[in-house]
Length: 333
Ligand code: TXA
Ligand code: MG
Image (cartoon, rainbow, N blue to C red; front, side, top):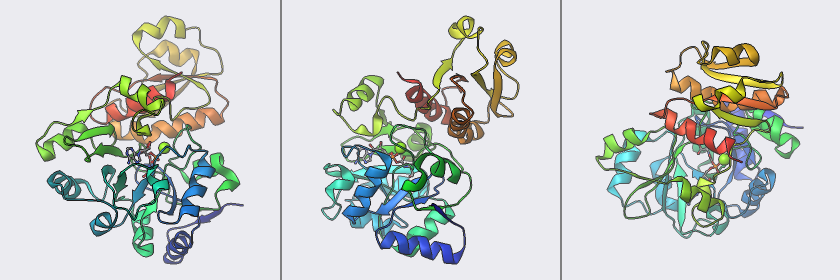
């Protein structure tokens, strides 16, 4: 039986004690729910990989409460890091830095770098502060499936494999953190996320490298950082991303087909009348709301037994870049 912990001083202390003593606990963050374990406890970290069914070659992000804890695990003598930390921590930004030897190889999959972030979610922050240890936490979903943005998503897909879930309600961003690599000469965005390329470049005054599709396919073969796997975040239903070229084929939609539009007013009204119609937001330009609802929509449609999802893509700008990144991977064959 899974136990739910709430936002109370007693439950925060319980979660912190569980983590310190080597238990695995699902925690809310502002991005998605994480499956958390004491980063220096190899048994606990191994349990995280096992529960997720995640290959050991895929490294975990370490979460900490304060900048000083970052110094404990990584080399931080980088002016870009200072600028970004000041602007975006606590928050949905993960940085890859050269690691210190205290970080177990299991966490970093044998790499000489470690990914670290300071989450903003008040409950995550309170628990990290109370336990005062670095916490390794991937998203709390079975490997390759859609990330959880509600506590019940964690319970639904991990079931009794996880004993404790801290209930922090719905995640604010609904999309995983932006990951940037600061371990090389020039910074690279490894995974687009809630902190956009524009925000990173505005703050630092430099242009960031990005990784392209060819590199993400290479990542799937284990050649570069696995953080960029090409197929990922996939629902069980077949996901088809809509563009105008696809419209003719989609008109013959069946009853177990859902059409997800960005806004209540659909871009393709005929599809809305032929399929079960769902929408992500009241207006098509509310990217924060569209991002917040994307993963939970995919899970909801899987749960409803929908076989095919026709999904309207958000504009490729600001947060839309990260949402499209997840949708492309979710739709990949
Ligand atoms: O928003 C988030 O980042 C959430 C919450 C829970 O913090 N976590 C998350 O973790 O999305 P995960 O494990 O699902 O995705 C982290 C990605 C992985 O794909 C992993 O390959 C990549 O980060 N990663 C971790 N350490 C890395 C490293 N040292 N170098 C390159 N990529 C790394
Ligand atoms: Mg994940």
